[in-house]
Length: 283
Image (cartoon, rainbow, N blue to C red; front, side, top):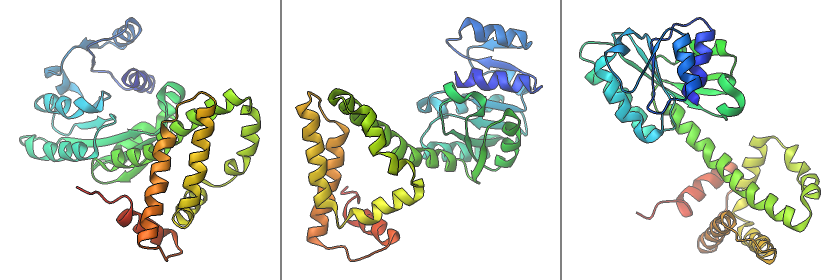
């Protein structure tokens, strides 16, 4: 879907389509490729040598292997735009691979992270861009109408920021599922939105930093509140999942604070203490 969306957008902007590679192409996209005067391929090959820009929009688990398969066929000076949700380290390794294996050719690997839902925003979905040719890619995508931000000079920087964002957005999504389903079960869904109005009116940075700054000294009390909320879900015939993890985090903070009390007052001090005493890997 992502590949087809941006393919169509670039064609509409006057770019020439060299070809499209897909193993399970639907009829509508195949027709669009044909209308653009290009061909559908099932594997990377010599046809890629005609492209000045190659866009990869596959699953993150195959991002590197696909780049390795494309690499022998890429022309000198090509910009390879990886729009997958892949591991940041793999993006860095692909950037290094482009520098080492191009055999006298300049291959520019650029990491692009999509920070929204393409099925809703289409080619206007916000993007994060990182890599040596990030500025070029930003200029390439800006005419499509979306917000495009350069976030780093090395491939992997954009992917890393997207995954950091995902900790918050996907965690919030999981809690929204539990919260709204429980509220619906209790007949309180509309009233809940009114009760959450103060959160809606608080700037996100202010909210997040306030939560972290006050988390440690209030962790034991808040852990009990989470437990009560979890019990309310159970009383309404629901099985908490995300809330169990939330309760576990508050409990871990409370234990660490009891063992070695936190005496700081700033957000920076709280973050440092939590990283050392609660979230530090035991491996």
